[in-house]
Amino acid sequence: MLRFAAHGPRPLRRIAATSPRPRRPGHPSERRGAAMTSPTAPQPYDPRRKPRRSLRYRLDKLSVYAPMLVMAALALATYWLSRSMPEPIAPQTIALTEREPDYRLHGFAVRSYRPDGQLTAEIFGSNGQHFPASDTLEVHNLRLRAITEDGRVLSATADTGASNGQGTYARLDGQAVVIQQASASAPRMEFRSAQLQVWPEEGRVHSDTPVQLLRGPDRLSGHNLRYDKQRHLTEIGGPVQATFLSVPRVMQK
Image 1 (cartoon, helix red, strand yellow):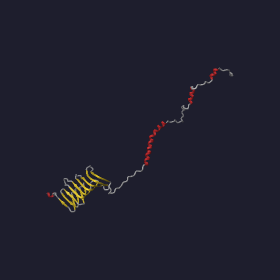
Image 2 (spheres, rainbow, N blue to C red):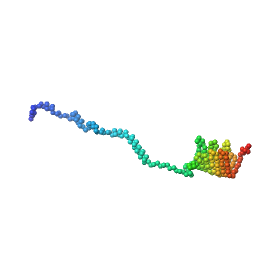
Image 3 (tube, rainbow, N blue to C red):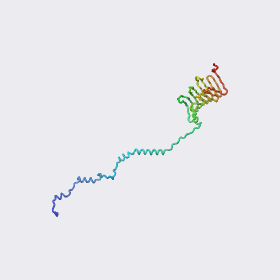
Image 4 (cartoon, one colour):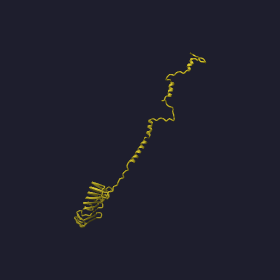
């Protein structure tokens, strides 16, 4: 049954125009509303909210401090090693006695030189040992060759002997022989004894045992000897035997 309103009937077109129209699914207005309410849509900016950093960003930041961290780790490791290392042992000096050698030699040759490089002495031996307390070299089967500043050559041999570090003094024991080569002012001289002491540079020869002296063709023997070339002195003590084959200069006149 149709009933009219109190104010009269209205046209059907007007009623249809004022009633809301149904929207089709997927209408743009529906999509726009859905986008506004989607959970994946970008949220509005909030200054109180901190932005999330990616892992790559954090690694880049860490690489800036990596060298300093490595240096700090190395410094700590070095400090730990220095603290954990044991204390160094102080070197112990061993005092050698006067009759204790510091080194030994076998089949050797020792040479001494002047500051200008000129050879002064050569010592050869089959065995030797050095005593630092007295700076003495003891030699077996000793052979000595010395050259003085004026060019004189002196040689010596003995079963055993000893020399100082500079080669300026030698003691000969056992079949000791000292030979001073001839020069323009002196003939060849040869000293033989069981023990001889020689100062090559000073031209001195001493012996406290029976000695034999060969001076050119002359031969002298005695119980002891003091010879000094610089002083032109030859002393032979005890019973002396002498054989002169050369003619003295006084007799030649």
